[in-house]
Image 1: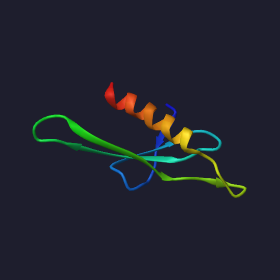
Image 2: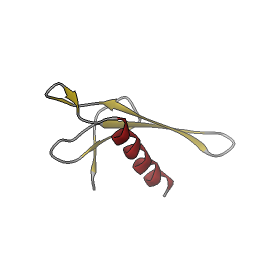
Image 3: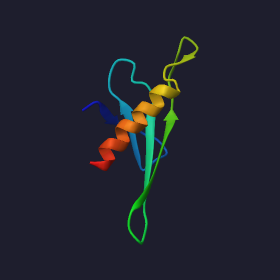
Length: 73
């Protein structure tokens, strides 16, 4: 509910809903032939307000953890 689809370089791209909307997280998932998969996540787009980045590394890492939990469930 808190994330919406966005355009970006990953196979899955999500942007936080809300007034400030923050960064876009891009996700690529690659299945391995022997089982399991590799998941890569990165901040592919940031927003700048008044010359400052809206999201800092702590926010990026917390969003990566939240998306990781969703993918694991």
